[in-house]
Length: 270
Length: 124
Image (cartoon, rainbow over all chains, first blue to last red; front, top):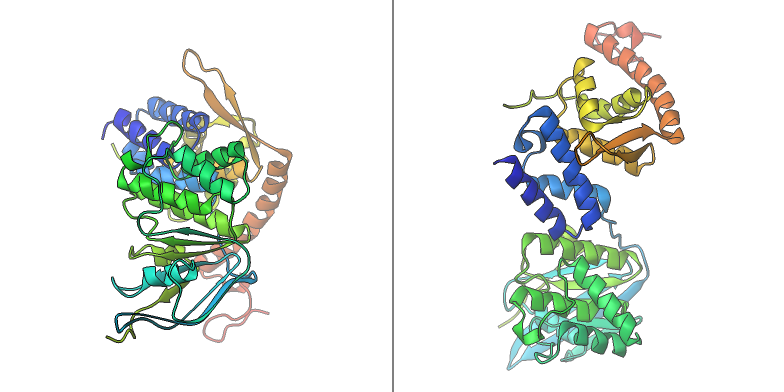
């Protein structure tokens, strides 16, 4: 790999992970100077550009590690839910403390979405109790967006329901989008966005305004690698501030980034 | 052209060595890498050097300053802060103790090592 293309890939990776342009320019100029003066190859000295970029990002913005040591913000016990004689949720219990990211994993059809809908009170459980301390944000697996509105209008709409002014909602939505490696200012109507970008918009509508508990159903569907990393950094920062998250996902990395893993569905009775 | 593989322990001593070199005055990245090589410490890949400098900068031990280069886009010079000088003074002592302990172990001179030697040979 030639140095020019290494530098370009490095800069792209830094950009994708949300590093500001002045910081990127300084890093690039410093490395170019080193390579010129030493007449050396970037790959020999710095390794793969995306891997090196990730290590630099970690030094610039160390990931704050969430730890589940706060008070319980969500506590659900004995949840049962059946559809047409089939038991989907059978005595499921979930607890999420401040600072905790609970990953809900399980095979397709194991009831992950059913559980999140029950917790969000969109489609209540048949039996069981749910206690939530504070407000709740929810991003369903699909839908939940208005195809005819722009992303910024979504920010104003969802932020407004949580007491933000239009200007504050817009600023917070754009900041969250930026942190998710997406520049949402001037973006087209929700119906014209790609699948991955629609997921980002859905995640932002759940996070905006700072509800105490956020329920995210397959939030990373269609994300590229950089977006996926950005998402987990955003969510880690989010819960460190004293909130809780419950994330349903079939993607394997969820178990590494969550603080608690809840596997459901093994005991479902047909 | 490939760089020489650095010694396995270089990772642990790179940051103190950088502080030591900067005690003589400010320097930029490439300059530090040549001085490390001239000092016999080894060839340090840029991918180890710059993250080490950034870590020291983030900890407040170094302060960076951009200076115009001769015709080039400029260079980032690093200088020790007061905190960096304190850290260096501390690490000089800590390293001297550690190095003599390692030397004692490697040369088999166990009398210099903490109690609990081999073959019932206990130094007290």
